[in-house]
Image (cartoon, rainbow, N blue to C red; front, side, top):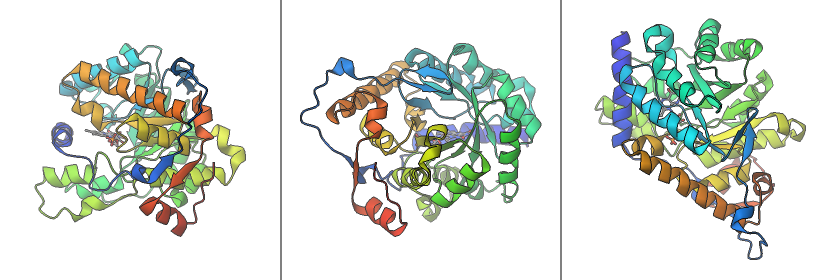
Amino acid sequence: MHELRETRKIEHIRQSLALEDGPLSNGFADVHLIHNALPELKVEDIDLSLTFLGKKLEKPILINAITGGHPAVTEINRKLANLAAQKKIAIAVGSQAAGLRNADVWSSYSVVRQMNPDGVVIANINADTPLRGALKAIDVIEADAIQVHLNGAQELAMREGDRDFTGWAGMIKELIRHSPVPVIVKEVGFGISKEVALRLWDMGVTYLDVGGAGGTNFVAIELRRQEVEDHSFEAWGIPTAITLGEVMYTLRQNSSDREDRHVIATGGIRNGWEGAKALAMGADLIGLAGPLLKRLDQEQAMEEFIENFQQDLTRALLLTGSKKLKELRQQPCVYSGFVKTWFEQRGIILSS
Ligand code: FNR
């Protein structure tokens, strides 16, 4: 059974390399920033740095959870960890379930901390992991925070996946009570609605990663892996720009909590312009997985991707007249098309 799970992990990586994003769009084409023709700023004025989990990041980027748990993936984590260290950005390891089953594979995760002794490194577990396992996952990589992933859609798409999704809320509450580090609840590509966000904030969660649709699609990965012909399940999920609006709306309803609550935008964000829109909508950090995995064979291409992302973020800040990320967050966004209709029907008002 272990062997089957670990083989699946490698197949996921292979399938995700072969697959395009989608079929849903991430929604950011319907989010618009407003050009400032008189910004009175220099490129070198623009400051993309921030403090996240008590540490300084040079850019608001997280290399989000991908892998770990098999000797064959240690090299992937080494490369991703090296990129995080070089670019002074945050990184999360992939699900640590395999390490909790077999301690021999812990080194495939701990390499990420070894290469980032001072950086932000985040643990990752399933929502049904017992507390002892969660604390072990934190300890092994001296994590600055722990992600709990919610992946019901992915499990349902897997022939051998879980069918019982009860008990997750209780586990999250228990973890918040006992964890020495903040708990980040994340979706893996199907988004978080405003109703679920409210429940999570009420439970005491202070970090949410919206994990919206439009990028890497785990249902599509599973269906292709199983060679299923009917792909209709692939269009499930809340696009990233929309789930971000849903989650931000729950924060803005109670603005006194804003400073203590943090939102990460992940899911199909593929360039700094989309990243800037997500930051203007209120995200603290942009999570990236697929685009880095796809460039893993050429470390230079991974670095260039981050450099281009940074350059476009800088341009977007300058052209909205924002010197810092906090100022970008004050900028208004205009919503069009499907995203506007969605927000209207859901009663979501997002004035900055
Ligand atoms: C992932 N992702 C993921 N998430 C998680 O919480 N635990 C995990 O173990 C994994 N594993 C994983 C493997 C592979 C091959 C990929 C591509 C992704 C999900 C990831 O962190 C992210 O939420 C999604 O991939 C959406 O972001 P992108 O890829 O669209 O930028």
